[in-house]
Image 1: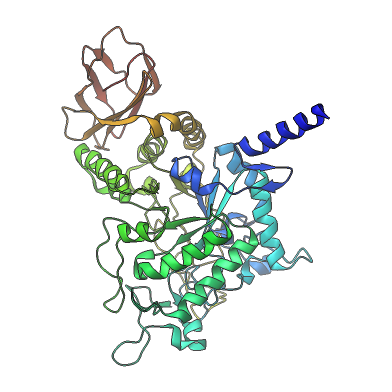
Image 2: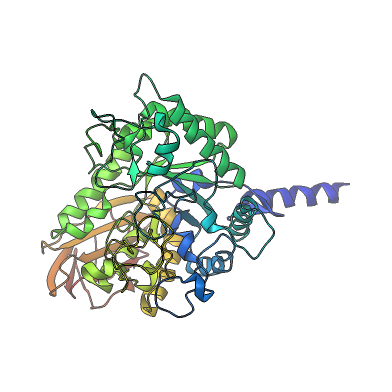
Length: 515
């Protein structure tokens, strides 16, 4: 009897502590806990392209040529690739049906939702008798079996088709017409109400979405443009989801940099109010990295973000939003070195790593057919609408991906290093380091006698010489170069570097804790 009880206890302990949070095919969502510890390595995918089969390699999916766009089921074989790359969370772009009236692109924007309680039929495989709901469940279950959490995107606005069906859900302008937010001509602005009077019709629409994705087995929601709904709206919705699953994650697309509403008719809720309402994290402002010329700008942003998060009693976190599907490919901005810098920043900062499908192989998202008239369309737009240099979300197109094997190996390596650095990131101290060259940034993370030093050159055109001041550094300290392109010189209290354009260096000291 004692042996049996011990065996049962050991099995239970293994199930409880296993890193991937599953045992005997029973998935236990621990995403909020993982996110709060900066342990999520998130990979954003568009299911419509993630598993697409473009057999003639012309970049567009031609159904009359027996080519196949991405579905819930043909995405499953690619999950092993993500595991091998070190990904433990996927952000799935909207899986709701898309509008076809006043549309953008030949398939319709993923963010132009025509329903919030059903799934996009474009994502259903015709090679199975399973319902689309069961196909979605199978995809999520297979992700869970591989230790991958799943976040589902919640669109911010409704399509024109939905407006025609349910006009009471939408804000009207002075002439009684539905409001087009920003320059998003294919969607209309929801009337979510105010802090004192939430619009129950829109709230119930979103509640149905929460019910649907939780029933499918999802682990969290990414709220698109979360700023355009009242905090009270989100608090009620988040509280509702947490009553069903306390570990259900909520990620807000919000930033300190965004301070105005998307329309004169829209409400605006700042990122801090969203976090107070229950969101676990937000985007932050790291996407501004592409504009920085001075290393001090990046250090100031890191310090400000850390201070903002420290104000909350409940654990809150941020993603490494250096590149998202709304950003131009880093390859087009500053080349391979910029992508590598983003990887190392994600690996060493107190952020949840965040990447877009195709980033890891250097896709520039240049489509030769872009914005040309299409021979066939599935909406009322007969042009292949795309945003240059950004992941296509408007058409049935190829899988994202480039051919840069060096980037791919660096991607897997930095994700592995991220897992090694997480205890230092969570328990140690972030220390800005002084540099002598304006374009250089440097910081350290120190914990239990060890330090990681990261140095970067934001000048992507010319080499830069400089010195980094490192308190208590001695020539006798053993410096392990984890990542360098040029050789640093270790001096008392200083590191002297002649950095290549856009170079990032990472040094590990196992015998020095920087105070």
